[in-house]
Length: 114
Image (tube, rainbow, N blue to C red):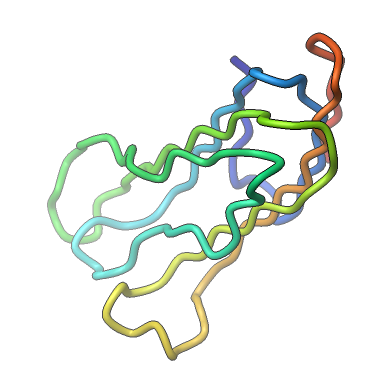
């Protein structure tokens, strides 16, 4: 499985139908902030937003959120993830992560990440 992280804000990638990529994003425990899906890219891709691996939970300690993105049908779409407080949805997010995904109808292609 290919892995992408938050070292830059915008990424582009190509995947095949059924192929998965892992998106790892970083934040701080105990801050009230967390990563959430703003735009899932459906029906071109499916995003599993339920995986936030447990880690050290002391306030301010580093924490990782992992999302899995799977190609569902051929096409191009954008997945957008936001770092915000769940109870404060009206406030602008502190960070955003954007991934443009092209799902090819054939097998697993090569990829680019920029």
